Image 1 (spheres, rainbow, N blue to C red):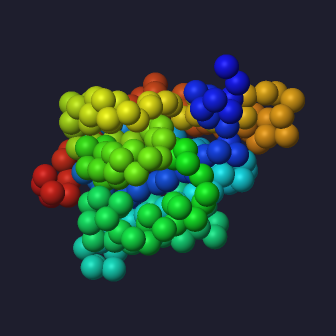
Image 2 (cartoon, rainbow, N blue to C red):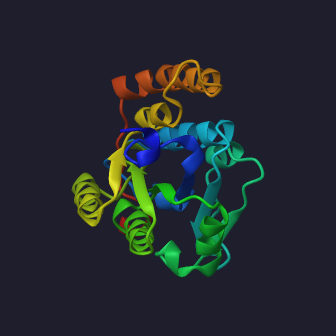
Length: 214
């Protein structure tokens, strides 16, 4: 079966959708290492830019004054990509967000968001209902605690979304070491491994913040 059949996702058919990578939102995650999530989503973003994959970036509550914009590390990886702010936890209820996705012309959405159980799940399931295909990158997303994250993963899969991981997603986008995309992929693989190894050796956990405490 060839890549055009849809089982293997190629870069030219995908858009990357990133939802709510904001400091106040990430602070509510306390059983997953923030550094790992941030490294993975930033690596995906850098690869998407290098592979000419369109990126849709959304935030929640910035215009309302209740939250702050996208984390600097991710924003720096996405030059020229504007944030689409909204009030609803379901990004699909924001017309500008849906318009931006449709404007990419891509039917395969690689989606990441925090929290897994709300901001990612609601938009991903809505996209599936609208006829898009959805793949989510499990190690680039998170939720308040691990079991809540895991339950959301189950819900997403039952709805028809496909799980993947950061390096596997990038590998799937380019696949061939003779591809013109390979030099960028090689660079991201090396940088990712060198940054990830010490994080895995000494993982961090946190005291609850945000809605759960001070």
